[in-house]
Length: 297
Ligand SMILES: C[S@@+](CC[C@H](N)C(=O)[O-])C[C@H]1O[C@@H](n2cnc3c(N)ncnc32)[C@H](O)[C@@H]1O
Image 1 (cartoon, helix red, strand yellow):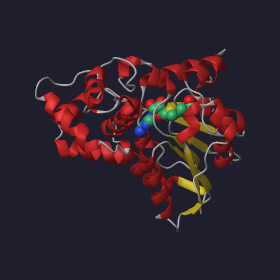
Image 2 (cartoon, rainbow, N blue to C red):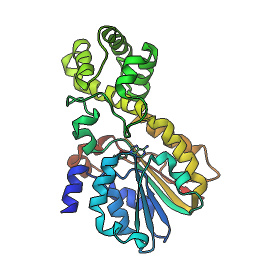
Image 3 (cartoon, rainbow, N blue to C red):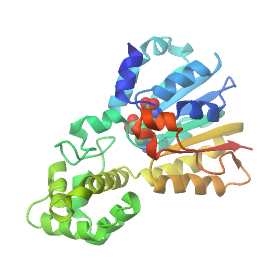
Image 4 (cartoon, rainbow, N blue to C red):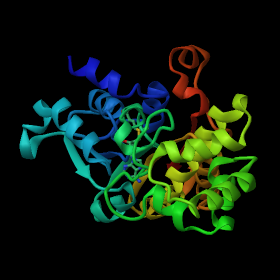
């Protein structure tokens, strides 16, 4: 039953490739930085030796609540539990795990299907909801950004985080529209796109804008870079870092951080690994996934 619920919450992407990449063979600590529905964490618990401990982070309270139920039995073992759930940003993992020997870290970036499908967070343009997009209820919302950033800043966000070819046109339209009324919901943003972009391009444009705003709201690229750099000193020899990205900006950061630490890291994936055709057919979310793996020397 728990497994069925978790699959509805989010179908884990490239599960086998991630498990192989993590090389779960030691009685040490393995970290899942992006717990979500717990798909990868569950498989890590199954695959890792009895003495290993899995520490799983999520900034989103709903993911933690969902997984507290999913893993209730394991968590009920208290001190001897092989799983620890951390309701925290993964950017804090080096601080949280200071002094520990970490044997592997997994990051499956972005948002879960559950977050997309639950309209009140404003992650999806398909549903009317407040224009929020924060993983945790602090800091600027997506509405704050579209209502207060300069036109040039909006152009940069849409271009750099969404690869949006019409960034300039959309940013200009947003600035015009907000002088009449501030943006409050996903529908307000959709209306701007509907007015300025031909119908056949609208869904892709909206997907790119929403992704770009979400990345900006949660400082996803800054936190990714910080996390990768700060975790390297905690990695035991032979430990693996396995990162799955869904956007070229994320993938570039992973590639560059791996490449910029040649004395500490050996890159195990010369090219980013993509999902196999069977998985692509089964799970459309795997289409944009790019997996990179490095090993601590
Ligand atoms: C793609 S989902 C992970 C799905 C998970 N691997 C599974 O199999 O169910 C990404 C998750 O990471 C969380 N997340 C994204 N960025 C985060 C961050 N900087 N810190 C902590 N959690 C984050 C999101 O809230 C979301 O639940």
